[in-house]
Length: 190
Ligand SMILES: [Zn+2]
Image 1 (cartoon, rainbow, N blue to C red):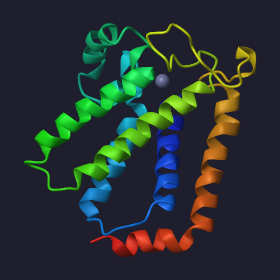
Image 2 (image 1 turned 135 degrees about the vertical axis):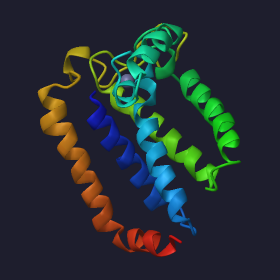
Image 3 (image 1 turned 90 degrees about the vertical axis):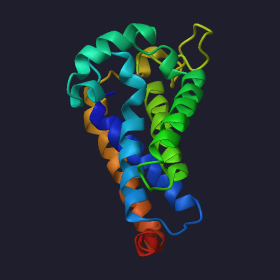
C-alpha cells in the first residue's frame, strides 16, 4: 500500500470516528495537531522499512530508517501487529506527556488520532498480498480475502484505480450524511 493511500485511509478512519462520537469543544491547535498525528500514525507502521514515506519526508530519514528497520525486524513484522499497536500507544503516551510541557493541546485527542491512523494502516495492509502478522510473534500473516492471489498488490492498479477512489467516495458519503455534525465540528472549534 502506498503512503498516499495510507494517508487517505487514516483520514477516512478519523472521519468515521468523528461522526460517530459525541463532539465537544476543541481548540484549532488541537484539531491541527491531531490531524497531523493521524497522518503520521497512518504511515508509522512502515517505519520498519528504510524506504518508508515517513522516512523520505524526514531530513536524514533514510539513514535513520536503515538503523531502525533491523530493530523492528524488517518490513511487516512487529510494527504490523497487535503488540506493535500497544507499543506505539505506550511510546506515544510518553512522548506526548513530554511534549505537553511545551505544546498546549488536548493530548488525549492527539493520542487517539494517531492510534486511529495506525489501526487504519494495519487494516489496509490486510487487503494486500503480503498480509499482516497481526498475532506476532505467532508467525502467521493474515489477509483478506484469505486467498492470497485475490488480494491486491501494493501500488498496483487495484489500489490506484479502485481503493483510492472508494476511500474518496466514503469520505464524500460521510460528509453528505453527517453534514450537520461536520458543521457542528467546525462550529465547536475555538
Ligand atoms: Zn505497512
